[in-house]
Length: 356
Image 1: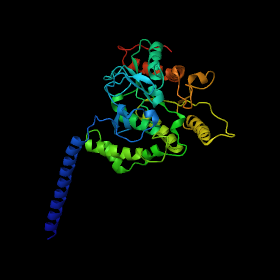
Image 2: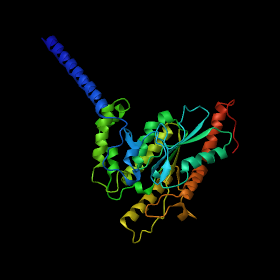
Image 3: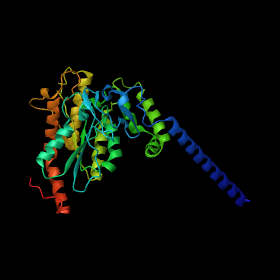
Image 4: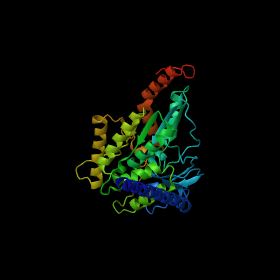
């Protein structure tokens, strides 16, 4: 009798599993018919800095990204193109030869180069590195996307590092990522196991992408923060920076954080937003001092005012992007030199030792 019951239990279990698999297959087929992956982003609300939704598409890792193959788009106050991967670059990044140095710049609309007529700092950095090391094979990839918070940058980095294989990662973030009242983007840190499972399935499942897109749309309509999706509470901001640092180190990648601080107000008589900026400046400084996060602020000191465009939103000007590129070059020069000489030892026939 126990053997008969055991046989029935196994049979019903197999029937339930096969039925569930059949339903999932039917749901996946339906999702591929209903949800077109190339449709423009359908979120009802986005940060103003994210720009025109028709230029964006859903991204399972970071919520949204620029659509690929955009030609001469006039948005964000500038004219730009995107390549086949949706990056603001004129060329694709092919397979990375072992002797090439690749620098990946992750950021938001500042790294993207919104509101400037010239080139954003990643393009200027590439030119500066090639002048500094003329015999080396160096390229800089700009993976900045308008409207990203530091949490979305973290997701984007973890999603792309396998195919990108960078030697250096530059993380650019700004004070307006930190929440004053709302903490909408901080919901990303409390995603349940089901959402994490969907993100793992998203690369090969349109059903998972569709469910994640619905979840992102619900998060976008949350009334937590009238300023948009980008806000992150201070603790989540700091922990995200530390996770990115540790992730880069675990993958053997040089990490540098760029956190430009602008006109730090006096605490006396400060508004709530100014107090938040003061706290941000102090906590970011603690990251560098107490948590060994390589941190650079290229937009302070003499001539800082000319580094920003006029207006309430402190966006870097063309001069500001040039200062950022120079500051980043100064902060990573020695480590790039070390990496080049490591490659010279490993491939002496293909690359020469570089004098510092």
